Image (cartoon, rainbow, N blue to C red; front, top):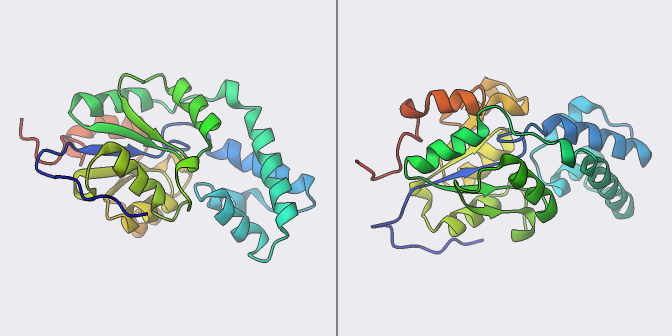
Length: 235
């Protein structure tokens, strides 16, 4: 996907947020849902291996865990099982501590806040409602808006387009190595959180500009971070 070159003179700054694991406490729910989905379809895959793939798109996850020569019908059945199992949690999904206030603090500082979710449209809608921060969110992208999933940069490019900003006026916030890699390929600096279960060295080694414990931790250090104020804002 090619991002149009906007007029950068008056372009706002945008902060692009991954949602699963970054704003919502969902990583291990996805892990359990995939584990059970694989089991139901005759595949024994450990949760440790599954967890390391959460944050990839489902196609990449299936390639990694079942092999690129996997049976497409079995893969489709596993994906459908995961979606059905995970949907059972929808009414209980909760934001990570500080997530809602972080979004609002970024908006108050002049950032255009865009959610760059790799979830399907209905699943993303559930998480946006749970976040309850519509007043701070300028736009939302979902898996249905792109043709290639993370670690491809397509979701980042789409979020930039929705925000109407070039890469140099944006910051991405994510929780997995796949987020950092996708942002890097889009030439957007990335801040990483430990809430996805990756360690600090792994995230920094992938290229994260800084690593924070959680949304609440990033909020506490907002004034010392890349999110203190949008690029070019000297107010």
